[in-house]
Length: 208
Image 1 (cartoon, helix red, strand yellow):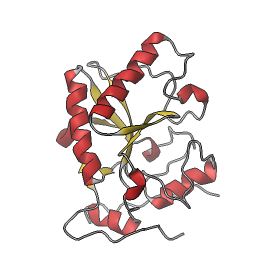
Image 2 (cartoon, helix red, strand yellow):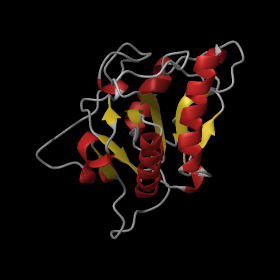
Image 3 (cartoon, helix red, strand yellow):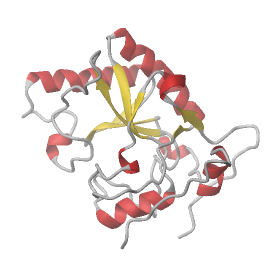
C-alpha cells in the first residue's frame, strides 16, 4: 500500500532529525527492530531513531529535565513508517491502542515517541506494565498500581509535560506534540531521504 502524505515538505525543513545515544544523551532500544514486542516479530530492519524537528527540540528539554532528577530517558519507538503501522494494525486492529493506518499514526508524523525512564544503574524504572500492554493497567492513572509505580509514572509525566509534550491516557509510555494531527504524515520516500544512502535500510512487513 502506498504511504500516506497530506502535504509536501519544504526543502528547507528536513522532515526528520536523527536521534542517537551520543547526540542526545538518551538510551535507545527500538522494540520493533527486534522480536521483543507485542507482535513477536521484527517490524523494522534497522535500529535508527528519528523525530520531527519540533519534537526533537522538545525531546532535548525532556532530556535535561530527566537529568535534573538523576534519571535518563530510554526511547522505545519514535518515527514509524506507514508500512510499519500497517503491520502493527494487521496483528492488533484495536484503535484504543494502535492507530488505524487509514487515519494515520502520530508516529508516522514523527511527533510521537514511546519511552521510559532509567536510573543511574541503567535499569528501567518500574512502570507497572511492559510497553504496549493493551490493558487498563497501562492507563496512566490506573489505581491498582502500588505507590512506587504511580510515582515513577508521574516522574515521566512531569518530565514530558514540562518539555511540551502531551500524554496518551491509555499508554503511560506514549507522548506526542499537542494537536499532533496538524503535522503532515511523512511518507517513506521522505524518510529514506533522511537515511544515509550507504545504510540501504528497508522495513519488514508482518505477514497478513
